[in-house]
Length: 111
Image 1 (cartoon, rainbow, N blue to C red):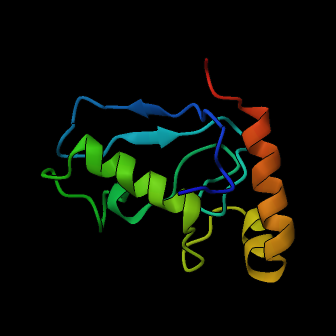
Image 2 (cartoon, rainbow, N blue to C red):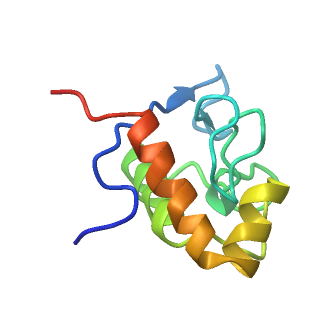
C-alpha cells in the first residue's frame, strides 16, 4: 500500500522508565516532527500511551508501534497535539499531504 509517508525513515525514541510496564514508555520523534498527534517537542500523543486512561501493562511494544504507524496514515483529529498539522489535516488536505511527502524526503530511508 503506497502512502504519503513512503520512502521515509522516521527516527522514534522509546524511553522506558523503571516503572515500566506499570507506566507506558515515552515515545518521541525528532522535535518539530510534522504530524497532528505529535507535540512540537516530538512526544507522541496516542491514547494507549496515556498513563491516566489508555495504558495497560499488557500493551506490548509491538502494539505501541502499530498504534504510532496507524497515526501516520490516520491522524486522530479528536486529539491534536500541534496546531499546524491539525489545521492543515482538517482544512487543507492537499497541503497536508504535500507537507507529509516533504517530511518523508527530509528523513530518507536507510539503504
